[in-house]
Image (cartoon, rainbow, N blue to C red):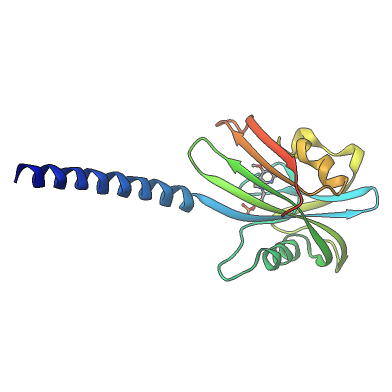
Length: 183
Ligand code: 6OG
């Protein structure tokens, strides 16, 4: 009898442990946002937008946002670029995959695309004020701090995977950036 009770308590302890672990994994998963980022390149120039509101407000960035339910990453990239800049992506390629980790436990994964042909008229939208920049004159001081690390790979058309850990003031505390063959 004593042995049965002992076994039962060990089993319950184990179940508790597994449940807690599952809860943590679930929370981490729920805290991850899947996003797209489209950067249009034309010759020596890249198109960025000044983010006018929301996450990243006041920074120059490519165009993108959350992947919607039932939407593929590519569909989301095309939709976000259209909604935020008025441009329709005609030719594009996956350029990178970046994961961001924040001190509150939230995570963002960004699927980066290089857009090399487009249709439509560029326009300012409620979210973004667009502007073309020469690659060598990118305004890194007013961009996300990770950008200066991966932009050269984007520019040289070297596919990459990156991970960036931020502190609460969005300074990079750690990073891992590597070229890759599989995106
Ligand atoms: P909305 O919240 O407006 O989409 N994004 C980042 N881009 C860079 N370059 N660095 C980061 O470091 C980023 N975190 C998110 C993904 C936000 C847009 O900003 C991108 C989206 O394109 C932390 O829906």
